Structures are given as structure tokens and as C-alpha cells.
Image (cartoon, rainbow, N blue to C red; front, side, top):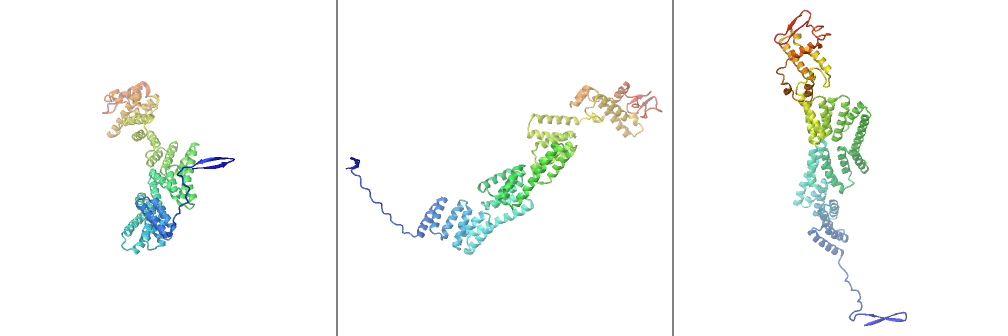
Length: 523
């Protein structure tokens, strides 16, 4: 079959299939005569099917359509509340449950779902009220009885946690809040209090993790932002802490805790910076006083206070307060057991005060925490000084410093040899004479070592002296004394036995001290 179309003065044929039919009229759709209530009921039935299949989002869509068709039916709100509960959307569920019981005060399931949402959100009083209403409507309702036990247990944990918080028992607070959260998993307040307890227990990493999870869901939660700021504050991240406290106060201007923390944070920052400035400009006493004032601001701020103690220790050594510096380093280490700088500073102070065993322990700890060539050398030096300290200190016997010159060594020997010579103490008791004899011998030992360059080098370097001089079995202090004074080093100018020491003038000639082995001939 063909037809033609006229274009201008010409006609063009348009081919059509032989079996092509003419267009049909639109089909007539039968009108839906169901009532809104019937349509809503069908939507509810379809929603129930998806609920059983655990497709709660699709079920919510269908229950919402049912509510739009029939907004006065309590069961539709109750069903949608049940879906929200399964999706942990307890605030949405609570709103629907409340609407359901307002529409039908005898709707037991509505009251139960309202209680469940109250409990999950940590609204324990509301949960108990709803459950008590159920027991009035249905005294034998087992679910209501069980949920009442749960709600009252949660209330007990909250009460005990608050008492523990007020008394500063943060371990118990943590215990109570973890159990309360298990019963009320959607309660932000319990999670914030748990995080704050972790901060106050110095478990900062755990606190940060829990707060990050909470703030991802509730980015404008002022309490959570405050606790996160507290975490930064106690980790000595002062600038970040200040930013968080400021944000908290913008969200909640009456947030008392944040205002107090912000004030402490600012005071601590200012006082510490003033101390640092005083130290850098050489005003050591002022810096010491400012660090002391800063330490009084917040005893709970562990890491900041550890640094303040360390800073004060440094200033203390400049002021000659070595013992106080050791104490400050010890306090810094107590606050921060991994504070390497404090260990190093304390070890150096121990070395200066000749507490070598303590210095060795500190350097061993440092080397364990931070192995390095420098720290190994420091430990070796401390061990050497410890070894040397266990021998007789010949410098101390002669009253000398360890860098004494040869002339100073001779003068010191002359002085102490005459001071402790047995003949000078002949009139004393045997015990006193024996004590002076021992001192006289030690003076001789000291001079024997320190006056010999080779022996002195070995002694100063910490080498064993026994092998070098075959011990002191054949040592004779009298020989040293005689050799020293026979060279004209001790019998003139009032240094020897003539001129004020009482060993000549009336004694004359040869004098000996019975039993001592020491005998001298005087002119």
C-alpha cells in the first residue's frame, strides 16, 4: 500500500507495510476506588514485608506513604519507629513513638518503643515513665519489666559515675560510663564523660579516638569539642587547646568548664613564655621564679609541668642550685618517664656532685631509650668515674683539685705529711696515734702516685694501680717522707720540724715513735 505527499508541484510516494495498522485510541485505565484508609493499609502491609526482610529503609518509605494517606493511625508511626530503632536512628524513632502514643494512649508497643529510644539516648527518667505506663496498661508485660531493670541499672551507673567524678576517682567514672554506654549506646553525654575520664587518666590516644568518632556524627557537640581541647591541653599542644576552647565558647557561651580551662591555658602559656624570655636574656633568678609560678597554675597538666620542671632545673644549675636541679629533673621524670632530656640533665648533675652510681643508672636509661654514640660515650665516662670513685681519692686526701700542678702537689704533701706525722701525736692515746699513722701513710701513698707522671696518668685514666706498683705491700711512707725532706723541700721556713711545729727545742737529736717504724734525726 502506498500514499503520496505533495511537495511543491511534485508528489512523492511513502511506502507503508501491508500489515501496518492504524494507531489505536489510548487504553482506558480503571479508576482506583479504594479509600485512603485501604490504600494506607496496603502500604503498611507492603512495608511489613520489607521489615521482615530487614530492608528497613524501604519499609520506612512505605510506612511514610501510609502515614501521608492516613496521618491519624498510631500503628503506622509505631511501625516506622521500629524501623528507625533498627537503624539506630533513635531520635527519629522517639519522635514517631511519641506521636503514636499521643494518638493512642493505650498503644502498648508505642510506649515500649518510646522507652527503648529514651534509654538508648540516655534519657533514663523518660524511659522509666514510659515503662511504668506500660505496666499500668499491661501489668504482666515481661518486656516492660525487663526493660525497667535495665533502665534502673543504667540510672545507678550514672549516679555512681557522678559521685566518682566529684571525688576525682576517674577510673570508677570510666567503669560506670562504659557500662552505661552498653545500655544506652546512642547517648553522647555518656561518651563525652567517658572520653573526659580517659583524658584525666592520661590515656590521651584512646580519648582522641572516641572523640573523633563522636565528632564525625556530631560536629557541633560543644562538650565533645571541649574535651578534645582538654586532651590537647594536657598533651602540651597549647595553641590547639586554645582554639578548641574558643570554639566551645562560641557554641555555648555559658560553658563553665571551657571558660575555666581557657583561662588556665592562657595563663600557663603566658607565664611559660615570660620565663623563657627571662632565661634567654640572662635573667636567671627571674626565670626561676616565673617557672615556679607557672608550676602552680595546674598540677594536673603533666607534660607541660614536666617541661617547666626541666626548664627550672636548667636555670637552677646556672644559679648554683645543683641539688634543687636534681630534684626538679626527678619530678619531670615522674611526670614523663620517657623524658630523655631530664635524664641527661640529672645525670650531668649527678656527675658534678660525684654521685656516679646514680649517673650511670640515668645514662643507661638514656641509652636504652635513645641509642647513640654520644650517649654511649657519656655512659662510659660515668662508669669510669664510678670505678675511680671506688678507689682512694688521692686528690681529696691531699686537699687538691684534679687539675692540680706539680708544685701544688708538693706543697700539699708537705702540709699534710707534717700535719699527720706520728711524732707530732706521740702524746695522744694509742687509738688516736693509730688513726694519725693511717692518715700519714695515705698522704704518702697519694704523693707516691701523683708525683710520678706515669702513675698519675694511669690513676687519672682509671687504670688499675695494683699491677703497676705491685700493690702497696712494700710501701713505706717514712721513706717518701725522708726522701722528700732530705732534698731540702721541707725543713726550712717553718715548714719542717723547726719553726713552730714543736718537734725541736728540747727534744734535739734523734727521735723515734715507738712501734711505728718511723725515726728521724733532727739537727
